[in-house]
Length: 370
Image (cartoon, rainbow, N blue to C red):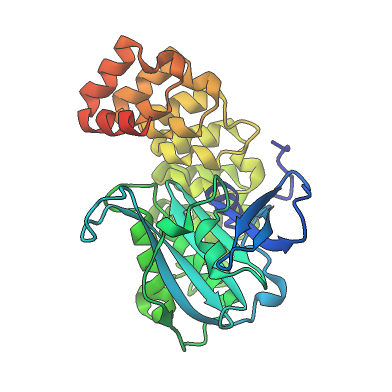
């Protein structure tokens, strides 16, 4: 990764947007000519059978995506799309992947939003892109078969929510409540339900974010002793502090020692500080993706992270996934980590037994996925 900048991240949520969100823009093209590295071409037959070329352009994020002229456009409806995990499963089963397709200006453009494991995917469909394509395409990965997508009833909206307001909700509520993927408590269906709940009633108290520093007098906000006490009590208050405190190693260390995920609010320079990052990943292994890329794959940091939460092996490079000592530490902490073990070690008897002993159900599910 690029070296950390002295000025730090201007947007307090920059690390979250960079590490947890993938965002792309769809545009129709006259042919299949390839573009830059972040562009991908798809060739589809539309509802009428006509072949069309669609370009997906991946956006680089350090904050909410720049939606330009669409920012003030109104969201007029949404549809939930479901894809069953098994083709023959009964309709009453809850075993399906879900995502939301949002209609802007009565279908002049679209926004797809879905959770895939630990990533939030946002896809913008520009003028000329139909709902048919929005059901099929993703920000990353292969396209889906629209015929297998089950569109739920369209829900018309009249609340006056703009695209900009929706992006602000993601930057506020969604970011602050973001949790690692969990099959029961933090999954794709819950993300779709949260999006749809906001669109129906954006002013509801449960969708608002409280700034813990809002009523604090300015003099206290500048007092380091007060700031240290505040982040010790509420580590995520770091997000609302002045930039000078978000690049203060002592303040950030205090915050991450209580909640490692608060590392994402630190400046770039501090996220590249090995001591601060070690404190963060030791408290919460899921802080690993927020470590600056220049040191994120340092073995000491990775070992500490998987020791606290083995599943974060998924954020590591191949060399760590084939490191026997590190892999054993990961699967002994969380059997699900076996899914990310390098093929060279996946069927190693000690590794396999350790993962199965820690969580036999996890090993069974990971074996099916593998």
